[in-house]
Structures are given as C-alpha cells and as structure tokens.
Length: 295
Image: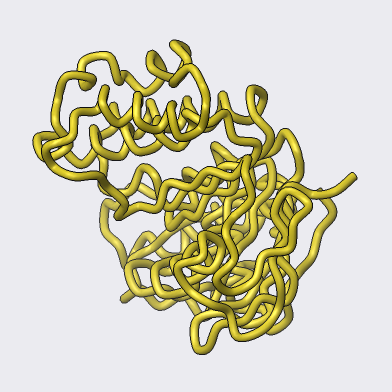
C-alpha cells in the first residue's frame, strides 16, 4: 500500500539532514523537536515554500519537486497563514468550497472547532486561537486525504488548544492521515500514533510514543535542582539539564537517592514518576546514533 506521504533523505542546509519518514492512512504522525531543530524548514519543504537540497517527497502517490503544485487531496495549515483582515470566516468557507467543489465544512468540524460564533467575524478581529481554528477549518473544506499542520496549538489558551486536539483526533478516522509539526512533546504523546523525533535536523528516533518511552526500560524519573551534587548516587543514571537534573532508575534506587539527598535539600518533597516522551527525548539526545523502531 502506498503511503500518503513519503519523505526520503530530505536535506536542506543547514536545517535538515537526510530526514526520512512516512505517513500512512488512518494515522497521526507527529514530527517533534524543540525550536531550531528543523521542523519549520521541513514544513516549508512539504508545502512548497522552500526547496530541499537533496532527497524527494511523495504525496498521495505523486512525487513533487521544486516548484511543483501539490496534488489534490492535500491540505495544509501553516502556523503563520491567514487571510485578508476584512474577509469574514463565512465568506472564506464559501470561497474555499467553490474552489474545491465541495459543500463546505462539515457540521462536525464546525462544532469541534467551535466555528459557529466566528462565522460572522472578520479575520482581522479574530484572536490567535480563533484564527488558528478558522484556518484549520478552511484546510478541511476540500475533504483532503492528507493534512499537514504546523504546531497548531502553540501559544493558545487551553480551550482553543483542546478543540484543535479533538479535531486532529477526529481526522484520524474521518480522513486519510495527518502529519503534525510540534514543539510540544507532551502533546505529541497524547496525539500521535507514531512520533518522529528531530534533533539538529536529523531523525533521532521513530516509533509509537509508548515504544519510545519503553527505550528507557523499567525506570522511574525524579527531577532535582541542578545545584545538588548527585555524582555519588548508586544505580541511578544522571542527566543534567539547564532547569533541573533528572535521575533515572528503579523506584528503590530513587528512594535511596532521596534519603541521601535529603540532608542537602531541607524539607523538599521529592516526586518519583513514570517516564514520559520528553524523558525519552532527553535521554536519546545523549545517544550518538539514531534509533529506529517498528510501529
């Protein structure tokens, strides 16, 4: 079966180096990495706003090159995209419906994205969250098979962000496939069927969120202030970061670490928790070779 999106050895100096991944029908794939790790450049290459130096992109069975039009059935909602300030949301939906030859946006997505109160508003009067929801709605007017979204919830209030999350979850079954560029590892862990972790423009690891977390083994995690001396702890892996030092190990090992650290930390309450996708990313970033997993 042909993938809806196939990216092979895509390079764009200096942001991307030999990035490869696919998006299959019926799945949400999140490409995740902190800002500056290549996600924005990857999105630009996918939508045709930038040209890769090497590699190729296939969308919906069609190989697209520099300057090529993207195939019908693809929809994209880049983060900074908007429409003229004086245009109303309802006018935009009608315009896009005529362009795509459809009956407009389904009532289901109007409800999920809470667009009904926005239909009479002009784009220039929308908040960031309202504009983002409206642009995602417009991307869906054409009933696309493949949807590309660029950090769709970044900087939004919880309500707007949650509605967009619900819409993405709905796309998994109602449409073909979704590729989401994200900075937020916690959101990727909630949304994704499969995650592509980017670091310094390369694929660091690929797999389901649960499989990536399982790479840490049967460990638990505890964060401590970065100034505490933790180099003498037994059976504990230490990962220093800017805001905290993370300790990885079994629960008994971390409980023993608490006893050793307590005299240095006063009455601090320590929290031992299961690992997350963010922990997997931090740990894998310290590994020199990329890790590939089956879904």
